[in-house]
Image (cartoon, rainbow, N blue to C red; front, side):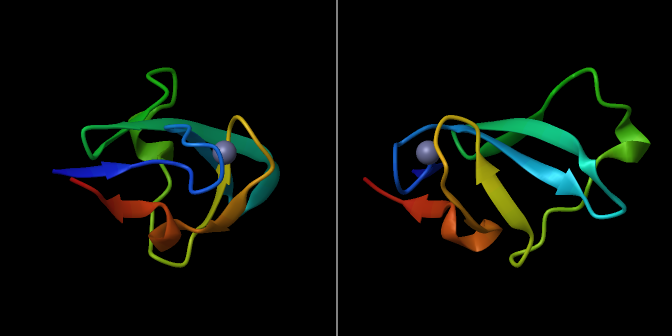
Length: 74
Ligand SMILES: [Zn+2]
Protein backbone atom coordinates (compact mmCIF):
# COMPACT_ATOMS: atom_id res chain seq x y z
CA UNK A 1 0.00 0.00 0.00
CA UNK A 2 1.25 3.44 -0.82
CA UNK A 3 1.00 6.09 1.83
CA UNK A 4 2.53 9.46 2.32
CA UNK A 5 3.82 10.96 5.50
CA UNK A 6 6.27 13.50 6.72
CA UNK A 7 9.72 11.87 6.92
CA UNK A 8 10.47 13.84 10.07
CA UNK A 9 7.34 13.56 12.23
CA UNK A 10 5.00 11.18 10.39
CA UNK A 11 2.31 13.79 9.85
CA UNK A 12 -0.03 13.36 6.89
CA UNK A 13 -0.86 17.04 6.73
CA UNK A 14 1.10 19.26 4.38
CA UNK A 15 0.89 22.50 2.51
CA UNK A 16 2.39 24.04 -0.60
CA UNK A 17 2.77 27.70 -1.45
CA UNK A 18 1.16 29.40 -4.38
CA UNK A 19 3.99 29.87 -6.90
CA UNK A 20 2.63 33.31 -7.72
CA UNK A 21 1.91 34.40 -4.15
CA UNK A 22 4.12 33.07 -1.38
CA UNK A 23 1.61 34.20 1.22
CA UNK A 24 -1.06 31.87 -0.11
CA UNK A 25 -0.90 28.37 1.29
CA UNK A 26 -2.73 25.31 0.05
CA UNK A 27 -3.22 22.72 2.75
CA UNK A 28 -3.72 19.08 1.90
CA UNK A 29 -3.66 15.76 3.65
CA UNK A 30 -2.52 12.39 2.39
CA UNK A 31 -4.59 9.48 3.57
CA UNK A 32 -4.25 6.13 1.79
CA UNK A 33 -2.11 7.80 -0.83
CA UNK A 34 -4.89 10.16 -1.89
CA UNK A 35 -4.10 13.86 -1.91
CA UNK A 36 -7.00 15.76 -0.39
CA UNK A 37 -6.85 19.52 -0.54
CA UNK A 38 -8.73 21.75 1.82
CA UNK A 39 -12.32 21.67 0.46
CA UNK A 40 -12.49 25.46 0.74
CA UNK A 41 -9.99 25.82 -2.10
CA UNK A 42 -11.62 26.55 -5.44
CA UNK A 43 -10.84 23.73 -7.84
CA UNK A 44 -9.28 25.87 -10.55
CA UNK A 45 -6.95 27.41 -7.96
CA UNK A 46 -5.49 24.06 -6.95
CA UNK A 47 -1.76 23.93 -7.49
CA UNK A 48 -0.22 21.17 -9.56
CA UNK A 49 1.98 18.98 -7.41
CA UNK A 50 5.13 18.08 -9.29
CA UNK A 51 7.99 16.00 -7.97
CA UNK A 52 9.99 19.16 -7.43
CA UNK A 53 7.22 21.21 -5.82
CA UNK A 54 8.40 22.41 -2.44
CA UNK A 55 6.16 20.83 0.16
CA UNK A 56 5.91 21.84 3.80
CA UNK A 57 4.84 19.74 6.75
CA UNK A 58 1.90 21.22 8.62
CA UNK A 59 3.07 19.88 11.97
CA UNK A 60 6.81 20.45 12.01
CA UNK A 61 9.45 22.47 10.22
CA UNK A 62 10.20 19.85 7.56
CA UNK A 63 10.05 20.91 3.94
CA UNK A 64 11.50 19.41 0.80
CA UNK A 65 10.49 18.48 -2.72
CA UNK A 66 7.17 16.68 -3.04
CA UNK A 67 8.78 13.43 -4.17
CA UNK A 68 10.38 13.06 -0.74
CA UNK A 69 6.93 12.78 0.76
CA UNK A 70 6.07 9.76 -1.34
CA UNK A 71 6.99 6.78 0.75
CA UNK A 72 6.08 3.17 0.23
CA UNK A 73 5.80 1.14 3.36
CA UNK A 74 4.20 -2.17 4.07
ZN1 LIG B 1 6.50 16.84 9.95
